[in-house]
Length: 181
Image 1 (tube, rainbow, N blue to C red):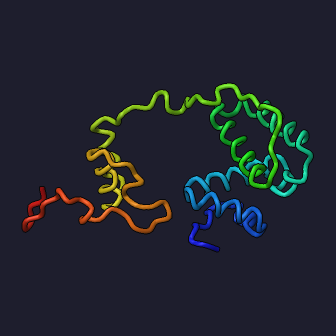
Image 2 (image 1 turned 180 degrees about the horizontal axis):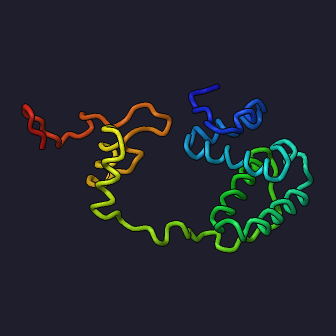
Image 3 (image 1 turned 90 degrees about the vertical axis):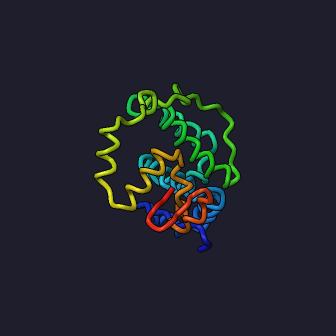
């Protein structure tokens, strides 16, 4: 396989299918994290619907559209619309990669709402202290950089675990003896 990461998913056996592997590797060249999420979601969708990626490709388009619409209907009481929307997007990505375009519009209530984020807030000082005390020195440093320096996690290192932020990446940092400013 190329430099793309192997998914850490229970569906790794799907990569034995050369078409699924190519689809995954193609996605990973754009975003390794996104590819892993898409891969896992495709596996989840197929398991839930008792099918495989190749069976989806072999189904008549109208049958796939019916399957997706039934999935939306059965999922709306259990999942947020944005979750369902993302699952449908993954299946459409796989189908498009396989040269299949759906014709019917699949409507999803609340497709662009993020209910899990609506009550999100900045942690209190006490909550932040507990976060800092719960991790290793490395995790504490990462948390401090995200919380106090405004860095995004991606600046601390690549998703696949190589590279990462180095002292040389901070030209304004001054170190004199034991003093850091």
